[in-house]
Amino acid sequence: NAGVTQTPKFQVLKTGQSMTLQCAQDMNHNSMYWYRQDPGMGLRLIYYSASEGTTDKGEVPNGYNVSRLNKREFSLRLESAAPSQTSVYFCASSGGDRPSQPQHFGDGTRLSIL
Amino acid sequence: SQKIEQNSEALNIQEGKTATLTCNYTNYSPAYLQWYRQDPGRGPVFLLLIRENEKEKRKERLKVTFDTTLKQSLFHITASQPADSATYLCALISGSGYSTLTFGKGTMLLVSP
Image (cartoon, rainbow over the protein chains, first blue to last red):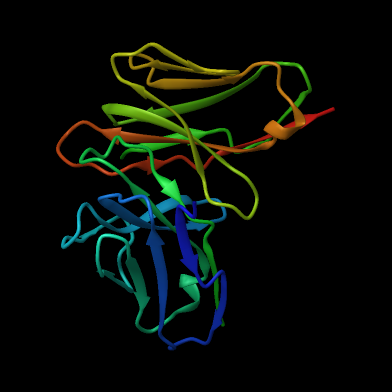
């Protein structure tokens, strides 16, 4: 029972390079989320998809794009990476049609941008 | 502005004692409050959810209280064990429309044998 799977686990990029972080869930959840976690800042929402076919901005969307490829998969793209985007990125999913449902997280992608 | 505050200092307690973690919020009217556990190098794991009309929720050794007048939630772990050592995050959902979770920064709990 995999839950939420994120790839890659670690990545180092140079400034200006592009990268897509992948996320897949096998729980048949409607909603999916991308967060970043920085020391002293906590988890901050980048983008979310309440259901297949929809995406919305979160608190810190600048510099990112997302694609809800299908119900299972939600990818996060950095078009031109910047050092300020060095962070740990978490994908999460939740079931039902209410935001109160518990979120299930992957184990993160640790991204360093030099 | 909206704020969720959790103790930034780690809480150190001895095995067997009750750990109490605090989550305070301002300028929110949360409909739900959730608590998560996060271990180093891992994603957060959901523990408990409490609704605004509930005063208290229990699950095994865990207890959460929610006081909308004080704008505070307390998270208790009774008979704490070294395996309870982790960072604990609170998260709020506002009541209007489709809202997303807003997380506090978390408090690290260290339980020593």
